[in-house]
Image (cartoon, rainbow over all chains, first blue to last red):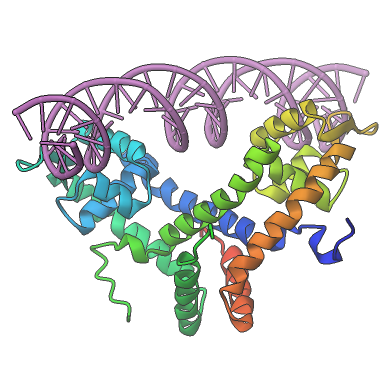
Length: 151
Length: 151
DNA sequence: CTATATTAGTTACATTAGAAACTATTTGCA
DNA sequence: TGCAAATAGTTTCTAATGTAACTAATATAG
């Protein structure tokens, strides 16, 4: 029952999953604060717009994959964005289940306002790190991303 | 790749806040999956237990600060943990608003089961990185954590 | 063909989480 | 003192989220 000392107490402030979570939430919240009020956009809605700004004509399923959101969240976000005329939806002629989504004129307008804010924000963050450090962070995140979590 | 941010398009998959969020959610979820079912503990409840395992006798407010949860979330988690007899609560004699929280016997028991799981998990993650990389990641997170987000 | 399985997306239900208002207590200061 | 402001924590109301069930369309096995 008695185990190594090091494995009987967890120091939350040094625990990687916890640190990532706190950092990530702080950053996301800080950015979201800048567009939520100004543009009445939830984080989920913004993510959908972000991928559509990157690539037009995606289906809801493709959006889900790229944003790492689940399909219900995408469906809801898409619904709201349609209501607000920020995106446009067709359905594929070949497969009428598949939606084809793109930013509307006004969606593009909003997108082009938010992108600089988001990038500026990221820049501010990254500026805290030296260029080599930035590259390292990038590489480390890449590695961690690829880990198979459930062996 | 070198950075060439046109500042008119955002590539979500290369956007630091987004990458952090996806990574962090994946990791937290994977760990939570291991104790939620087994011990009927939500992430919030586990966090409260984790800081109490680290330091006994904290008030709800101190728990909130250390876990980066808001006070409502702490209040609710504390309520559930009390119901399940996983923690014990007194109120300070000097200031009867201030609570004094600590793990109960059975709380300690559960704590001592989960800590190794969490640490093992973190270890698995970190093992993907070379020792120098681990130190670097640590240092980079430290730096990012300290950034003043709202200038 | 046609019955079954699969896929895309939505809806319904239950749970959780956050904001704001509220209670109780303590502090500050006129 | 005594009354406004501050603090600790809880409750309430509402919005966001996840799971499962559902609808519609397409693909496929027999």
